[in-house]
Length: 71
Image (cartoon, rainbow, N blue to C red):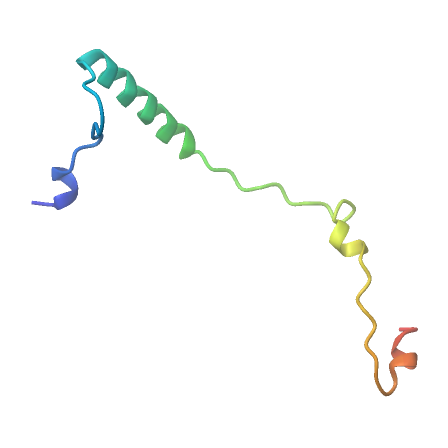
């Protein structure tokens, strides 16, 4: 048998919940798992709102740097 099917879905670590409390907890965890499964791709950010695109590339020093600074 598969070991994943032998493991319990939930395990009570502390306390002694009754059947109603366990059923409510199982329903809540199942609802959260189902809601988390609906992943959507994040919206693509516009280049107009991208603050990183507004930053200038740092100028390099060295031979010919004055020429490269105007490019």
